[in-house]
Length: 457
Image 1 (cartoon, one colour):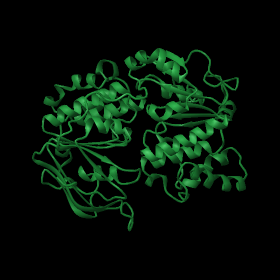
Image 2 (cartoon, rainbow, N blue to C red):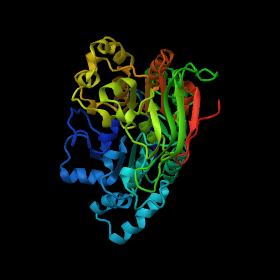
Image 3 (cartoon, rainbow, N blue to C red):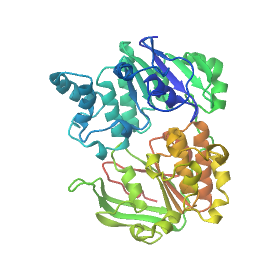
Image 4 (cartoon, rainbow, N blue to C red):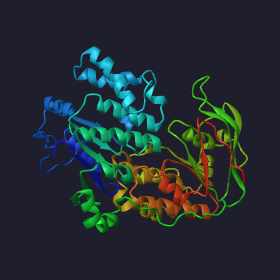
């Protein structure tokens, strides 16, 4: 009904993002694919393949879509220009645009960011900027595809509070695709649950889902409020083993005079399961990239097995350390899943690949010929993990490893990570996902404004 909020749940790859694209008229009008049936938005069949260019433009005016990957909809060099770009294309008067841009930035917690470069923002800040661009034109239908995926807890609370305000006014209909059901549940008027093949399991009120469909939802792999990962981490101290990596009083900045990491020190040993926590933009991803030699410190030093990772040849470095980017697409090189995961592997590493891919719910018999770029966000994340897990490095650095993951995906990742730690590896995860932290971490390090120190033993 107009003004209501529909929460869409389902396992990774069930078609949630495809539904979001269809509501905006992008599937199948702009993106190739086979479509049957009708999907009406304001009595217009937006996904029936019959929209001409003017119809698609009209659809874009009534529907605001936030992509799963915010970088896909950030197109300008300044934050304020990015928001104004969409308004200008809709013919807004200049004075109204000038008033609306700072207002919508403040609404999403980015007040004062008008002159910031989107490419220099953290993943969570980029997501909020993309949301500001979507909200700027006041769409009648707001479609949000996992809007909290890259947000720290404070940012996620702020975003959901903003969505709650929009829902409470009942002037905008909301379709919300979200794995973080703890935050999203209270916003929903109705819940649609999809099975792994995209077919509906149930559509009901939130209380009706819990009362009548909870077992089916959990079997499918979707999260429900209160669900936890099985097998919490040991409450004991971290296993003490040989040192694998050290960060010694490192400072780093992307721009002169603006350090992102300040005088940071960290020691990582075999058997460590370390979670790095911090707000968006605090430097978590930067610390991870320094550990594996993707960035060179401005001062201080980083050592990986006693060597400077910057100086280790790439083929050798890939077997000493693996890094999973926050955005999985950044590390894809091949045109098929099979070629991507086999790229650069030795014969002995190929031996266990089929089993690894099956455990990560990407069996090569089904997914091998698919393009990595046509997978769902959760499937892309698991593929990026498979590419580094297959080499069995001593150090695994995972940036938001549970992004887009249903319960089955998180359980598979957690089980494999624990096995690698038991075999002598160390795992560092930069994450906002407290459910994963509770089940994974033996040590937790907090980073604030780039400052992090090794906790006392």
